[in-house]
Image (cartoon, rainbow, N blue to C red; front, side):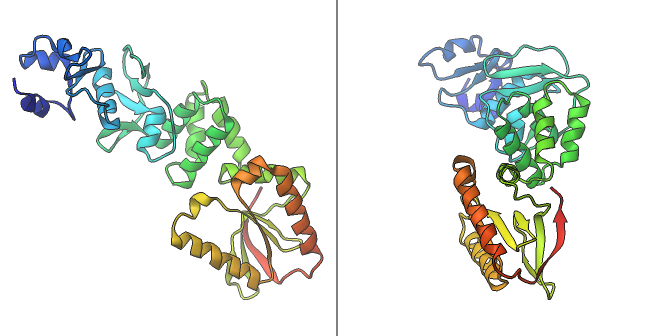
Amino acid sequence: MRIEHLRERSDLGVISAGALKSLGVTNPWRRCTAGGPWQRMYPGVVLLHNGPPTPDQQLTAALLRAGPGAVVTGAEACRRHGLPARAPEIRVLVPGTARGSGTLILERASPMPASSDVGGYPVVSAARAVVDACRFLRSEDEATALIAAAVQRGRCTPHDLQAETRTNRFGTKLVRTVLRELGRAESVAERDARRLSRRIRLTTPHWNATITGADGVLIGRPDAWYDDVGLAWEIDSKAFHFGPRDYERTLARNSRYAAAGILVVQTLPTRLRNEPDAVARELKAAHKAAEARPRPPVYVVEAQGA
């Protein structure tokens, strides 16, 4: 049978050995040997070329191996939801017993979680994907970054994540710890900033507060606001300054601070993590300088508690 016809009957070039045999290929494994034109993806699953599989081909093969009713979870599901997650394996939930192979992990789930079509694949909710991915992380920073990204990008809410940990608490200690630690922090960097601020005893209840002038016009929404002296602290990541518009917004924000008489400390997240003592000295010096001049006539309109 011509390879073009086989590819037409496959899904992205992925096909079961049973389907190949029904199409007249009596021994597909002979073509999957070293140097052969095809390759064995999983037991009973063949890829009709011998080059590196694409992520979609890898996932298609995993679901074909898993069988009907299977849904994607964990890091792969996070990636399908547009979240930064890395893991060498693909985790798939199945309604019955099944055996994984290599980097394919099959887990029986009862009841099966709800799923939706994401790019043509059955994928669990973002909250379930994040919780399942975090079950196999060992770093609090990795878990915090993933959870913060999911919330910031609107894929799920902290309440959604908490609900998932209540549904199945097995292996969710790290998620629950991170949710408590983050509180209302919006990123790993903000969490580190809160810790540093407490350590040097420059505490403030104003995180992500909205600051306006006497006329009510918005000035800024600093990561931290020291209202007693009118000092703003911004944790500015290079990741948010790739485009010219981002750079322009940062310049405009700093100009508004300057025009209102607000002192501002700008810190890169990498310095906050790698040079905390130096950042602490800068922040304390700025606070002292702000304290030495009259406080500008600016106001907190809305603040999110620490």
